[in-house]
Length: 364
Image (cartoon, rainbow, N blue to C red; front, side):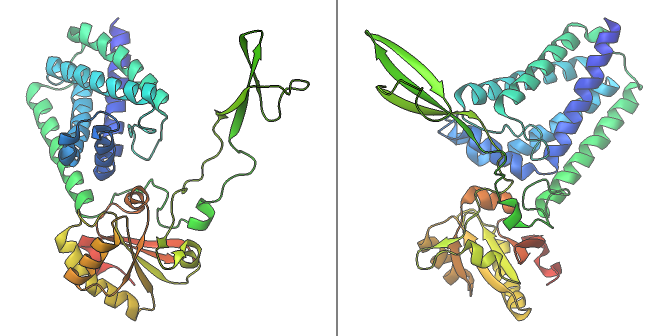
């Protein structure tokens, strides 16, 4: 039992630290995921949505701290109790997501390791089993350091986590795991793989002497059975999904100009996924970055999911000499974790990204 407790202790501790650090690299992204969970279409806890980001930061830092505390066995009972409550909460979320097919990716490891809902639930069940073992055998968890050293270690880890969180919130994630990282060719990243298409099944319904019979094929009706009552299709196997599959630039007057923009030699995209949530200090910096980019030969456009009326108001309020185009809000949140932010493209390749705090240092 002592050996089993030791294995569970190391496995749970390391996994919590890894999971927490991956999400700490991008707490804004985890905040978006919690906001999705709290939405009316999932848990119906809309009153929590304004607190999604602070809660995300708290949870990811707590994950790291509890993982470290478990490894060094500091405050054993508090640590194991906290881990148990946290994993019960996460297991409920992943089960709800998987069973009701509400959230396609739980965000357990951020964008670094995407998991399907059922994979996430399975992972949490394994962790729950291990944490229950630790909970029932907490006296077998032996401290590595003396109490004072354990306290200092925990404090230093906490300070370090808050430092990382502050840095990535004021700039951008240290490591970009998303589909629009620097060096990405957006054109290539949007291409499907013809060798790995979606596989659909066709359910053919027959009524034989009052009894319903269903025969499934991958295309045409069963041979010699043309008199079916109805046919339904369903996805049997998900094919290859390109890393970028929801990026499009549109306007009411010009239509879809996505390919036109991706073919431009120098483009500066001003990203404002939602004009109601933009940072005022960042918006005040946009006229200068627009002026600098145009002087450097860039075609400058603004992308937002907000209504044209809101775009016109933003142009007037902040003096933005730029045309606004419509892009899906989720795609824009994925492009850059800054509202506003700037992304530079060269023939469809991402060459630079900047948080609004760093506009002045952006090399054009």
